[in-house]
Image (cartoon, rainbow, N blue to C red; front, side, top):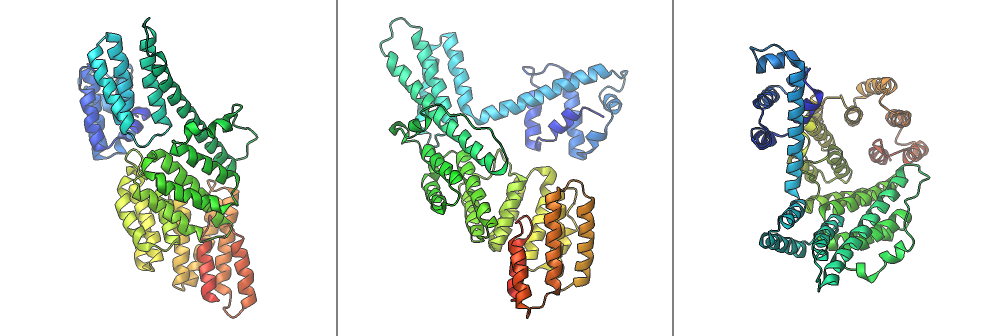
Length: 475
């Protein structure tokens, strides 16, 4: 087959991106080899017709399409493939740099300085200064850019013998460097504390002597992220102090407009992890709090990263919204945000989540119809789809179909090597509870209470809330 590296790389581009990439490929500045252009056009044409066809096409067939009158030359085709891969990677880098003018300005600043073009340099530096003054969201990247800009100015003036404003040029660079170091170090410390919650590690993140005293310095009081990070650190260290969680929610609302999207998103994810901890402790009201956090992320436009919405985030938002019973909002979200999912999984993710929504809306016929289009190549979807079916059969009183599904579900859990032993155990326990739910009598109060205690002791990887709701209905 043709190079797997080339095929998988080109498959990540949208149609619009492929059109822009072609402009780079045909530009003599980047590429002067006509054969590379031919290979690119062949690959794009194949991708547009049948995306999987390119993966199955042999090198010999590609060569025949490109050069029908020439003898197959594997070395030449590999060279063309390598050149096209490098051009595609270069395009990715250029596109990313175009989204961040700071890097471009720094390169222009150095280039104009080297060429001795003082008037042009002054224009660029006025533009940079204006950007620094107008930027509201000051994160670690902002302070790093500010440091590099001021450091370039200082280095330029330092080479001049008669420097009258030496400190005026040095101090801004020093302040920006300190701000960058503190905010980035706090961010790394938060990452380490978060990691420690879910993974066992005996390694500490080293902090220099006097670091926490430096963090408390009045010089840093104007940086919103420093105050937010300090609060996040306290939450991670004192998970039982719920007042800190509510304080974080208030502070995030107050400074949302002056936080960089990445910082706001990261704090929201930490708050959601805190909600998950409380939910696992049996505090189901935190479903609503977690859902409010997701809604705030939508409101502030931080869900979409580089034009895409991660599949896991999409599913988590919908699952949380369903458990919070805001079905109308969830339905609108499924329709409005599925377009941002990666193309390769978009239809499957949308179908699965629609089926889940319909099952909660008690539209069981529609749910079953949509479930038929869900592909079970992913274990997560297979487990989720089978669980939706279990709920539907129970709600409709189809106990024969339910028993049959429970049996086949157990076989699937036993045979699938991708499912961990712990998860197998949790789902088998869930199936036992569902089975018990179908046989218990509503008048048997003692049995109901005992079963509810067992449900409360289970993990939230399975539909724990649904089991509790069904037990409450029976009671």
